Length: 337
Image (cartoon, rainbow, N blue to C red; front, side):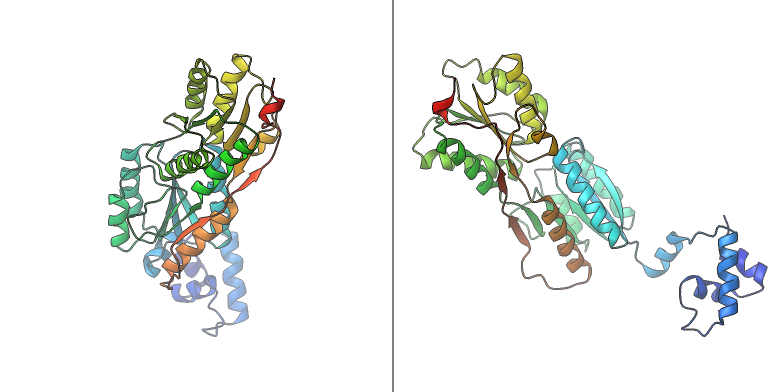
């Protein structure tokens, strides 16, 4: 691969002159048009590629942002990772991606390695139930923004959905349709989004004077939705509606219902947290609580850039309102078979 020295030697010019031309500083240093043209033509002929590593060492900046999410297999995280990467690319940042696979040890090790890569900032949906490692990095000067999952007991900025509001509204919608035996299949118990969604469900049930609640589950994956639905259907007092706390849980739930011959919505109403394009394409399109993914991405990047530029932040804890996408999976209890 050709370097600046090769171009300088062939043209009989100084390395400094070549560098100034290729870095767009020729006019500033009054380098003639003819010289500029020769340098650029030879650089193109030799397939010269700038050594960004060396440039980063000189400037002290890497233009690299790390993104860490629990799992790419969850469509929610896949879509938000895509949105973040697209936004950062338009700002000339590179993205280093880490998938922690919902494993605290993997996440901790990855954070240590990322720090050695001279990253300029970190956007993370932490899978850990402890804020210790993030706090250490933040205290050492690394700009960090949490998305979706966050910690309320530390000062690290975050942007997420108002999960309590989403949980409350989803459950209230089922109650408004006459359902009273409503099950909630939850995800990872200690994650704050899950906690707040469960709180929203529970509050809506209490406000409707419904004392019997069903809260089961322990993971945001499809298997959890499948197994918990199978168990729910064994109860003597069958529920008439299920609120799943992620679209992956919903997919497992739907599989179990189909195997048991339970029709949606004739025999069971379903609403899920998280929207995804495929929910509209199912034989019965599923009503969902949609999170504002693009807004989360944009706000997260805005917060991170403010930290990078040492700009004051008027607010660092932002919760955005979700909206319900009404489809065909919920009907009034009075219309059920």
